[in-house]
Image 1 (cartoon, rainbow, N blue to C red):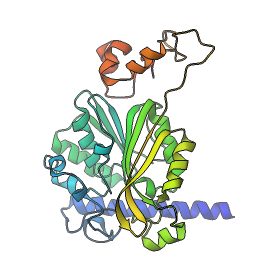
Image 2: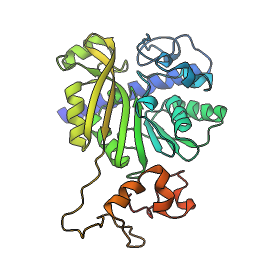
Image 3: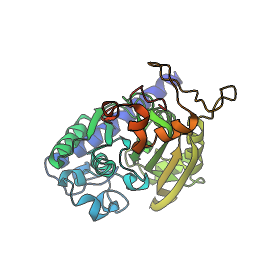
Length: 321
């Protein structure tokens, strides 16, 4: 019976989060900008408490000046993950919990026409707002997908970078989210996300006292829990850096980690890679595989320009994938 109760509680939490952010999207779409911001109390975010710890004020004016006003108003995050992820031209980016699309649009600008940015969100109203914002901005190298961040609707090894802005704390299955990040990244890919994180001495009950679940506080992981979760998911070089306090003992934070490149099989012939293209049976050396994964080398490694259009998952003809 306890398992059934837990499932019911989780479903209720998911629906609470979905309904609150649907209301925020509707408010922004109809032009109610009296209080947009993250996670919690009034105005555009419909009972979403707002202060300077969240929202568009965390972006530089140079980032937001060229964006549609409604993309900026719908900014509900606790940081600027497009900046911390150090995006580069030609990269493929996934934003988990993309909301009104601000971070997807900024990512598309940073990766340029040879790159691509996906957003995944479970809320129909947010997806409609994000697509309208992309149309208004004239951005074409983006796509918004409906889905849960615990089950991302993209293929394995589909992206170079995963970003997210104050959304992992809202998930009821954070281990699944971290596992999905690892799954969709190429070897050598990285995450650069913003989230609310608790100090290690703040208990789960104390986190709930400091703010609600939909307020991005009660569901936050501690620093050590985040690092342990990333390690369990298979990431290396994980770090959690506090940036600003959002409640006593609770901080906006930058989380970084890397999906490692597998080491060569000792039994493999020298200079050969264990990754084989199933279509041709050909494989490249470990060194070639590493360079192949660099965006500027994709054409040389993966074949024709048609194979490397970067408007969808990487082609199987690319041995490093």
